[in-house]
Image 1 (cartoon, rainbow, N blue to C red):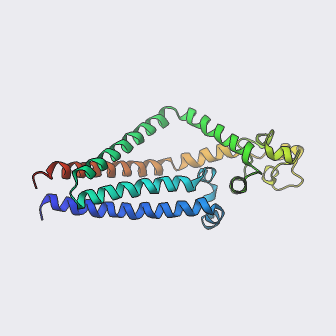
Image 2 (tube, one colour; image 1 turned 30 degrees about the vertical axis):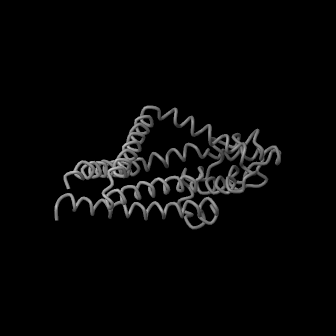
Image 3 (cartoon, rainbow, N blue to C red; image 1 turned 45 degrees about the horizontal axis):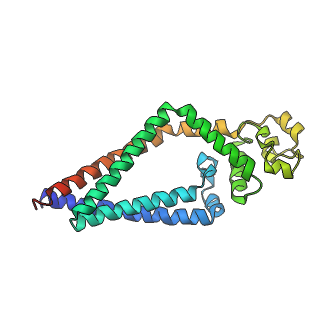
Length: 238
């Protein structure tokens, strides 16, 4: 078997797995977006992470769709020996790789800025959606119960929120360690820590794992680009 044929077969198989994986993520994402409560019940131990504070369903849908398209392009490009599909596959992987590197550099350089942006977005969700959206309320309650925290930094983060407007001087039970009634006096007495510092601690604790996964993905992307370019350059010689 020639080197070209071997790389072609490996390219087809590799991208076939990507297509299957992308389709799986796409299906899970649709499930999470439609029924996030059932997803949280199934993966209860994971509900204490920062992932539950964003709409995981739409993230999985986007990621699954991207992987499916990339896998399809790579698989068909290699199988049909199409220079157009191969160069498209190479270009998309290159763009994603550049974006990932840029995001990693920005994350390292502007960590404090990223924390401020995250804090601002979570604060807005807490004030505008808690008590109004059942999904957001469930996610926040699960976070506060499992991490034994309250709000972003303390119970005052609920002040001026729609929840307090509808429930004057009444805070979620986790803000008072379950003591009822949970009013400002009780919350002040309990001094429950905010969720934001604990979430940052969780993120930093898993930073090495995330970094290792990112490095592995980057290596796979470089390998995929190298194989795609090799096949593209040697099609005319075949």
